[in-house]
Image (tube, rainbow, N blue to C red; front, side, top):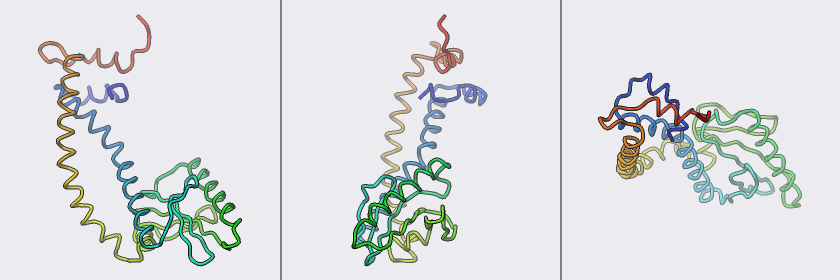
Length: 212
């Protein structure tokens, strides 16, 4: 973890204790992955609800999360947590994945149309057409499509809060143990006997790449 952080930034913050430094490193690491973890959870929730309400099936196609049928029409959906999810190359990959899914599904005589949809878990943007054929829906409209209820996007807030409270207690205990463990290791490896942080040793460990 120490090798992936900017030691100059933390030195500029005038951090004086090993525990404060370790906690800062850990918090920076957790905040960078928090959105990704939450995004995965919301995507899994959307798939679960779609399976229950739309008789949807998880997709084995690259880039596609689930699909469901209405008569001879099939809706293929890729789920993203927020609107700012991808760069140009990721958009190109998604476009390619959708086109491939369309080609495969349209080979069946029981299918006469395939709708490609990008479902975004939160956001206020109205339904728009991306790349000429991908319908992007987000927020309330997306959860309405998945669940059949226009209020579902609000209905899931309270249960999420109760679940989070249970998880937070366990998370805090585990985080405290990890901070104690890493602080002990940091004191042994990067501090003097009186507890002073050896910043030159920290920087050398992080950035030194020339043999002496």
